[in-house]
Amino acid sequence: MALAGPVLGHLDPQFLRLLDDTNDRLRRVFATSNSLTLPLSGTGSAGMEASFVNFVRPADPVVVGVNGVFGERMCEVAGRHGADVVRVDAHWGEPIDPDRLLAAHPSPAIIAVVHAETSTGVRNDIEPLGSGKGDALLLVDMVTSLGGIEVAVDDWAVDVAYSGTQKCLGVPPGLSPLTVSERAMDRVVERPSSWYLDLNLLSRYVNDTSGGGRVYHHTAPVAMVAALHAGLGALLDEGIEAARQRHAECGRLLQDGLVALGLELLVKADHRLPQLTTVRVPEGVDEAACRRELLCSYGIEIGAGAGQLAGQVWRIGCMGHTARRRNVFALLGALKEVLGR
Image (tube, rainbow, N blue to C red; front, side):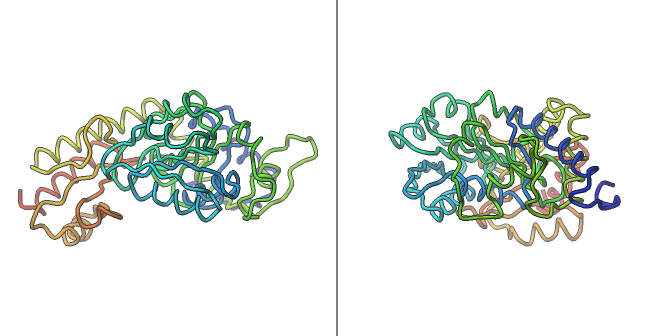
């Protein structure tokens, strides 16, 4: 309904009030008091780009945890902005040891890691990194975790975090919620190479901290901000903890049901995401044909494997508004028929 409403001007006072309230709602969901908390105009990858372009200086040592596609992408983005990238790799399907990240460099400028690795279904531990980061900034990808599992930006001492709207928030893609600590803003690059993602400029549009009014930066995607505002409202009305419990219950039902069908899950239970499950494709099964049959005959879409896992796994998302028992049972029944089990 929010997307179908009248479109306001991007400087209309009514829209600016909506934007302010959206930022307040994001603070509650991120569990932070950070003043600079906003929806970036762009998908989660824009959030990643903004997080590096504003804080990486040439030759900065940046430690990146890599156990999936999006850890790899962090390395690529950080390297393009001049970082001396220090990779800490783990097998895809396994979590990264926080001690290895903390020991990878004696004085990194940034430690970066993906909280919920979308390509593998693995949860990486964030809290130990915040307590042990020293002078480094802690930068975390929360694209698939925000709204689905515990996120505690302030308690975990996360300095920069970004997410996406289309995962556990249940909003169409197009925005990247971002939150930045004052500690990080004290180190922001004065003139980053991207004008569009320059937080020095964006902060003056989002916040009126000087009393001089907002400074126009770009034309905000008004309808998408309205949709995010509504999606966050639905989440907060349900209750953040209740939403996490709903994701957890659906994840357990799905994963137990897949095992009951004789399928093998990629990730061990202690670091397995409830909202995104990776299941190994059975030997002899045409994985693409199976996905196509699910979509065309049952109206159910599951994801293919990505990167190193392409052709080896299916990625089954059960997140946002789709994290419902009825959807889990519908998928398990359809998959049973397609596989002939």
